[in-house]
Structures are given as C-alpha cells and as structure tokens.
Image (cartoon, rainbow, N blue to C red; front, side):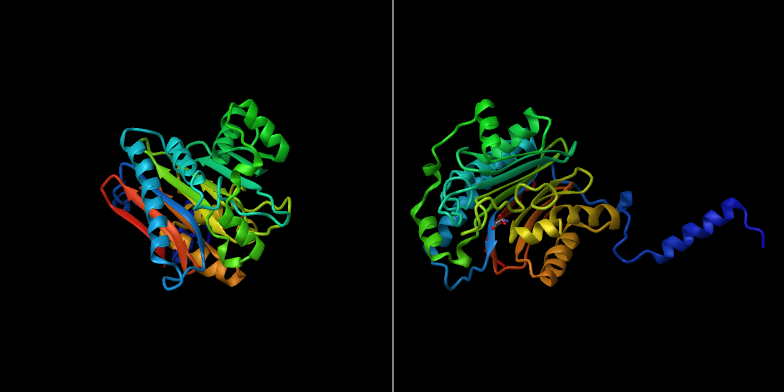
Length: 331
Ligand code: ASP
C-alpha cells in the first residue's frame, strides 16, 4: 500500500499516543488547577527523628522557628514582594538561628571547622548563583544571590567566594561566629543522627515567578574541602517557572549523583507528572533504591507543595495566599 506523508504522520501520532506510558500526561486547559496567588514552602533539614526521643520543649522550639520563618516569607509575598527576596529573607532568618545547620550553628568538618555551602535559582530565567566551602560570610545565601546578580559566573568557592562577597558589600565575620556548643559537642561525638538542619525555601510570587534556595553547613565530620549537593544547581536546588522549584536535604553525595532537584523538574516537564508524583518517585523510589537518605520540598507553578522525605522526619512548613498552613516535623 502506498503511504502518503500525512497518512503516515497520522499513524505515527496515533501510535505514539497509544504507547504513552501512564506518567506521560499532557496538561489540558481544563485539567489545570487553580493557582494560588503566592505560596511558600521551607525546610530545616531531614533525618532520623522520633517523636519519643525528641523532647517536647525542643520540638516546640523548632516548630516556632519554622512558623516564624514561614510568616516572614508570606508577609513579604503578600505585600507584593518577589519570590527571590522571600527566599533570601527566609533563609537568612534560618541561617541566623543556631537551631539549624546553616550559618550560625553550622556543623563542623573533620578538622573542627565550619565550611558552608549555599545556592539560589530563579525560575523565570534559570539564573543561579552559589558559594561553597566558605567560612567567613555571615549569610551564605546572600553571597549566592550576589554571585547570581553581580557576576557572570554560577559557583564560587573558598577564598575567592569570600573575596567576592566582601567586594559585594556583604557582612563578613570571624570564622568563630559560626561556633555553637551544641554542634561542637555533636562533632566530638560525630553522631550521625545529629547532622540534620540544612535549610531551604521555595517561593512563588504574585508575578508567577518561582525561586528556590538552600543553605547548609554540610554533614558533621565531613572531610575538609568536601562540597555537598546544596550549592550544586540541579542537585540540591533547582527552579524553573515551567515546572517547579526544589530544595533538597539529605546525604548530598546521592543527591548530586541522582541530580535530584532537576530530576523532579524533568519528570514534570517530560512526563507530565504533578509535583507530588515526581517528588515521590525520586525520593521514595529512586533514592531509597540507591540508599540515599533525605527529602525535598517543592512548589509547582500553581503554588502547590510537595514535602517528601524517606527519613522519619523533616522540619518543614508551607503556607499560601488562601490561608492554608502546615508546620511539621515527623513523617
Ligand atoms: N545535603 C547536605 C549535604 O550533604 C546535608 C543535609 O542536608 O543534611 O551537605
């Protein structure tokens, strides 16, 4: 039989549609959910936390810290602020809080020093900035933003990052600023279960722009010079207005090798998954199979959140313009 061009094309299209695996759904105008005017999700790290072993007063302190950081971001978005500012403000607040493993209160490396990593990305233009292995910039997330906005580069490390941050007018501190007794004690004990506390935030503003950021001291007792996933775009942080924003926390080496943050976005973009399905597939299937512990917070372009971890707990909070609000620790 003679096959005309258009006839062959039709058969090909019908064939492709029939072979579409279940995840390959295309969004139609009718299936589009209503978007929240603005929304924000944040995390303060994931790990093995049990309700029984976590003293109640301590839980309350974390819940309060998460709630205040959330409120700060929501207020900014409500008054018309941009997602980039909201993410920076929320992460700075958590960096300044010694409860979290970011900024003051960061964990110690194997030499008893703090080395901090951070990154930020805007979903409108896929612009990004990051710093790694820094020890004298008070707020690494602001240094990441400066790299994004004031340099043609994406990632600065160590001494160069500090020099750049100082020239950009950021507040510099003596490395002893990051010290806290609690973190130093856990370094001395090198307790695996005390390494959680990385912070991250994803925001959607009234203009439809997503932004994601992450900041960390890394993993307790890590080898000097070790850089985790948090400053790696596509691993610990990713944002794309077409899909979602993601900030990760957990065993960084796995998040780098499995390009976790970008993988979630790619599953949404190429397989039409919603944000919850994509996050669950990566964190609860792929990462578990690989042996990588941790979790992610994500926000899609409609302001819907996914907060997924394969550990027993993740400090997290979510809020949106409609007044929905969640603040939680355990799974
Ligand atoms: N992902 C961070 C790192 O590997 C640590 C964490 O999130 O707990 O550096």
